[in-house]
Image 1 (cartoon, rainbow, N blue to C red):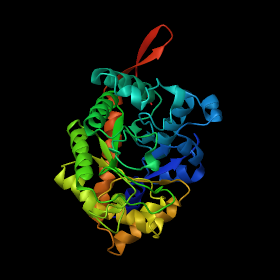
Image 2 (image 1 turned 45 degrees about the vertical axis):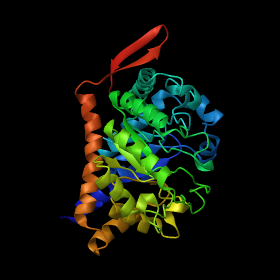
Image 3 (image 1 turned 45 degrees about the horizontal axis):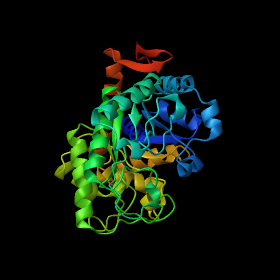
Image 4 (image 1 turned 90 degrees about the vertical axis):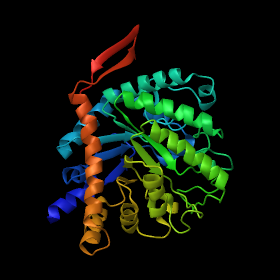
Length: 361
């Protein structure tokens, strides 16, 4: 196994998040060196407001999204996963550039078929713009205090959360966009903000069971990706966040039988880092079973990729674990592109009706 192969694999498992619609030199270099994904994210203020800024909504265009998707693919010389947060009733990174979705309260009054149809329409427009991965839906069944997910989650009724989430997944993935159910195993109560504090989910066997049942249903619906969350579940692993816990990810993979893409939550979050370096945290997430690691583009991509390779060389990370994770990520990117090459047609609204066209990115 060559050093270059390890380097490219280490790049493949890192998904840098950028707040704008321009690839800076470190991200371009990262893609050229083997990276195959990027999150077109939002600022901290937008995240907290659950809304994109007025300036962004006024200035961003679908053409800019298409252009950055093309540029990323050129830099990588390979199919690339272009991700956004496009949540139901929460953060909607694509704002008015795609057909909007009803608020969470309205979704409960819509039929499953109508939700799926609306989600298909929304994701079809996103796919035309080059977006092929949604970090959504949120499927946490929130029954207690949870300011972190305020105005983002789908409620406290497991059956209704599952119904809406499964409709979202079917509609989105029918349009050629991978859906990501988050945040495993279900953060039913979190009083701290995981981005800036060490967060814990209190022991509650019934609430945990309800959350796991929703994940079973979204897995049965064929969800392509699942994101473990940022908090610690003392009942499952008292020391590590869900995103870096072998016990939690093992529960997802082995007990629930999920064989798709496992995407970590933001490794920059204080609750995931828990006093460790981001490089050590990245290695821990890979050892736990994550495939794709979300982190800020400003976290030091070169240093983190080098640390992952060093961990393999020094015996802190099995080479096959890294290569398998990289293969999983690349396979998802290639599968998404294959849908386009085989003739994925999508429909999106225009004045006076709908226009159907073949997706080209």
